Length: 145
Image (cartoon, rainbow, N blue to C red; front, side):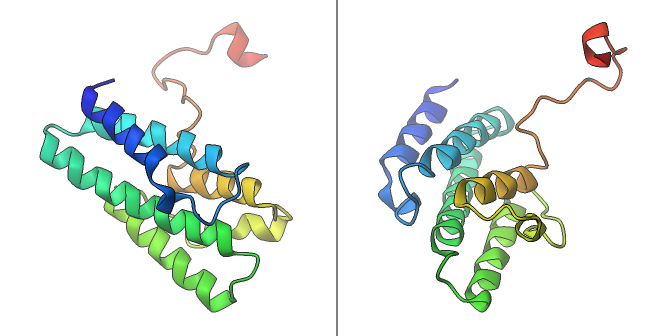
């Protein structure tokens, strides 16, 4: 990992504004996801200016996720919709597209904040938290079990 990525990750951990609405149990889920996003930005950014621009977009996205998840138990449906719209917009600046109904998991009973955050983060990056198999590679015996 480059020095710029390590510095960016440190900034995320030091910024209380990114986690002020989350409980101590919820923070690691978001920050671990953010670390993976910084590493991805680092490899995809050809220069420091591009990296900084995209890193700032990630910080804005994290701020919205913090607000949405941390305040969802007491915010109005209108406030939730507005924050989700900001999340979708900010995710879009990083090249992610949220499905039309990104919060449908709540209707399936996933209502605690950690589960809700994991589901939202998975929808933002389209499940890239898990390594995807190489489609050109033949499946192994382990893949079939």
